[in-house]
Image 1 (cartoon, one colour):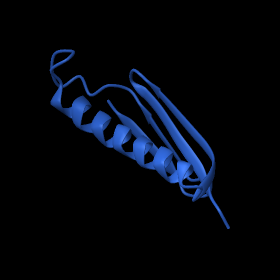
Image 2 (tube, helix red, strand yellow):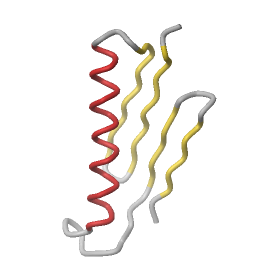
Image 3 (cartoon, one colour):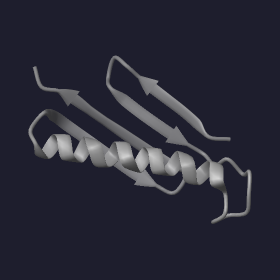
Length: 73
């Protein structure tokens, strides 16, 4: 099961686990979740490079991800 938690107060997204809806490497649910997480991570990195956010944290591991940042005031 994939567990996704978004904490609005800290602007933090965590994703944990696997869907186990198909063979490893052929699991469309995991692939879909992964591409969304990697897209968000890319957006966060680009936004940080443009100096629109600060304190960027991007951790991407197999089955686990954490993305957080602070908006500039």
